[in-house]
Image (cartoon, rainbow, N blue to C red; front, top):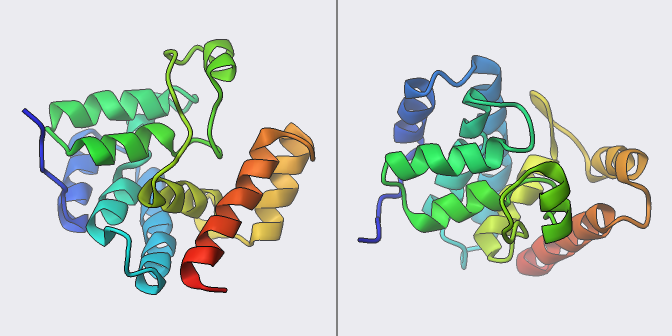
Amino acid sequence: MVSLNIPTKEECIIILNRYKTSPIVIKHCIIVTQIAEDFCNQIPSVDKNLVVAGAMLHDIGRSVTHSILHAVEGVQILEKENINQRVLEIVKKHIGTGITKEEANNLGLPADDYFPRTAEEILVSYSDNLTCGKHQCSFEETLKNFTNEFGADSHVVKGFYNQREFVEQKIGK
């Protein structure tokens, strides 16, 4: 049976606390949600409830691990909570700007597709990328961090540009 359960922001806080997610991670999730909600308010075609739930829960797996595996751990936690599959996809695909199957293998992730494709998946991933710890950061700040870590020609940097372009097109900038 497919779950239709898309929790509210308040229900997400309860779920995060149930799994003993640290206050720092919860604060981060709230900031990501605020950024994502700002985008949603400018893009009426997206499912705001889905974006809010995905943004609030995207890092619940950090209650288990702070490695890249937190995305997979988060999906496993939320499956137990009977959360909507579309929210699970947001949680799974929020890492970086997407991860290739080869990278997934090298990182110890299960072989799968980790690229955000739907508007809701992209909005949460992009909003997460615009968050530096406990505060919002600029596109340029994140770009500099990605370039230093992965290289200017990496698919991560190209993906970040693509995310910005997607969001700006939807907003009409």
